[in-house]
Length: 378
Ligand SMILES: Cc1cc2nc3c(=O)[nH]c(=O)nc-3n(C[C@H](O)[C@H](O)[C@H](O)COP(=O)(O)O)c2cc1C
Image (cartoon, rainbow, N blue to C red):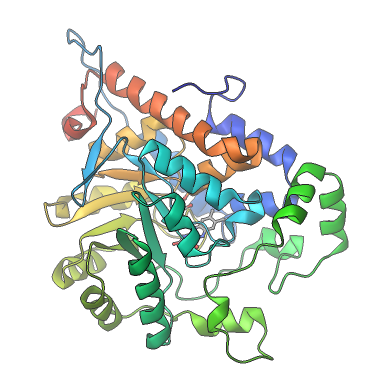
């Protein structure tokens, strides 16, 4: 698998994405919460993980595959849920799901995606996972779950870490709010990014197509609808109901605290994504690298630990495995790829990570990702 050598790293894709798309779209993806300390901490802590290489070994090939919930993926890296994905680049969600299917890596679709869950399942039938923002209304929740199940989603991922709406200063300053209203800045930004603007006109304004059908009060604003739609603080009781309803693996996303991990194990949850939403919800939250070091002891045949937030290189994915995570995800990497290269962006991101994971394993003297463990930590 080759990639466009003008953009050999995720950092290079980010630079190009910033040039090619309007600032309100770039800031929506790039921004963290409050002062963005948590976002920075995520990144800095991955750099701190040192590993010692071993030589005098044959590393002519390295096996990148990983098996999760009885399915083998070609590499230990996937696409996490990103709401409003088609704003970063028009039709980004279909393009990324298609690239994930082709390369056999997991693709998580957000409840707040801008493509119908049924359409994503058609292009990514073997690798699609569904991410649920838990609706307050239990009948609505059951309807979404049955739509996801009937469409063939493999894994259900329940996000825990938005008990309250986020205050993101960049979005406020850019005038990005619901319902979308066109500000002079947006008109200007669209004019100076014509390729993005033309594609957006062709594809239509991004909308929350999976949930809008549940808006039954005609005069209710979009923002009020979404606030009333989501459960403000997902309870253990609700997770138990979901566990009983979903016939298949259930994953909790946003776990950082020991009692949440213990509850997940107790309820019979199959996996967790240690995540702080990429530093977008609580600026004081610990880095996920730090949480992983505290929670990895709970990894078992029944509990699969995965991670995201601040992952930007294949070496970070290997670091995460040495610390105990079977699979890693990065939202911003994929959406910078889309912003930089349009429909080709997903393949480019996958190729970069694949190459970097392969090289890191070989450099460390490890012939298979599955065997990477804490004995490599310096
Ligand atoms: C623009 C944006 C939108 C997101 N939307 C969702 C979402 O709808 N559901 C969800 O569970 N997580 C969402 N996340 C969090 C990601 O799934 C993931 O946890 C995060 O991107 C990981 O951090 P990273 O971007 O630093 O790799 C979003 C993240 C970003 C950047």
